[in-house]
Image 1: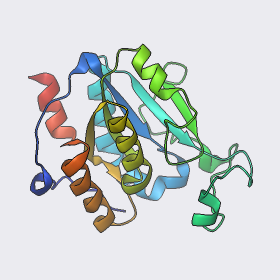
Image 2 (image 1 turned 30 degrees about the vertical axis):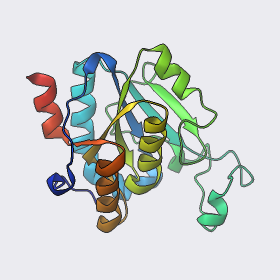
Image 3 (image 1 turned 120 degrees about the horizontal axis):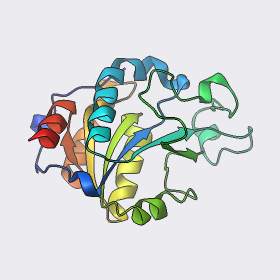
Length: 197
């Protein structure tokens, strides 16, 4: 597991989110990823709580496959190791500060939550212009969704301490790349300062 908040060396630009125009994306915090997700839960739940307090929509994604044929390239890439819908691995983690029935959950079967999901349209309908990306895995689904949001015209903020992946080098490489071309970096502490000043 790798997540870190020592991202200042990558930071090129600084900006604070605008709560009235911003949504929090919580990517794939499912039982399947518990080993890497558990260590960031305190920071992620703090981020969720801060965003809720600022009246931001909190949107969760859930990655799963209906069957072994519903996989695009992922089965080939990951040697058939898929998260099958209806299994405990596919469920969102119980320890998340989630409001079932209130929070939107976007179902996806690839890295992107924007693909054939209606997410972009829903964000536009809500008047959202910015997203904060959190969750797992930093370098796969989180990075993909940050890039997808950016190219669709959303301002992107990328959490450094509420994202995680399997390897510190991969985590850091994503942070460096996000800061260079796609997103403003923040952590749960800087977010708190931004939302409470």
